[in-house]
Length: 307
Image (cartoon, rainbow, N blue to C red; front, side, top):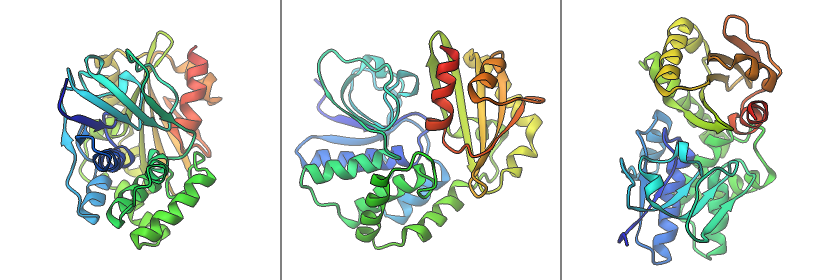
């Protein structure tokens, strides 16, 4: 049996997945488990800002989980797990997405709820364990919550998220609207990223029946930075689609200020995507008014369409 348990989120980690790994590892340690916060990829600029802001070290990079003991946070699908996860022992799952395909040999603690962030659930797990949330942990959890709900503007946001955000902001000693604006600015930083880096920066892979589908998202206050490189971005999408043998690859370029998305598409399943999203693609592009959430507004209808 492994001596330690890795608490780890999905590949292409975002702020909620990293902060959840850190916060839940802290809770497990307080409960006597030798838990190690881990990550399955490099940090994005927003998450780097958060860790510096709250003076927290980055989780350990786990490149291969074969033979390890894992607690999965913010995901529960093998297509999104760290390499080697199929040959690891998953002992817990805490998530806020659809139920995926992770299987275990025995019963485990499996907590998944329809809220805006994994951080919201973890705050409640701290309460249930009667463990105090210090200002540093509150800052991490608040960061994950605000990032995943786009400062409580995403359609995934629930009243529970709002209540938890108020409480965590009070513990952390910040105004969540002002702090949230800082996060949005960092989230938007595309810097010198190549088209391919933009395409796979926030990226998830799904199995819809027998079809393999990639869905990426760029959340920004400056969507033109991406769309002005449209041809290069589409070429990068074509490359990824061919390399990973996707039926279709959809990229959402989400305008955080206007609260809508422009979708770009690659692959052979465009007709199915159009049917699922009730959208028409012209020259591989479609405008999706009011669409901000991959989890709530894109994945479910596409899953239905492909199945």
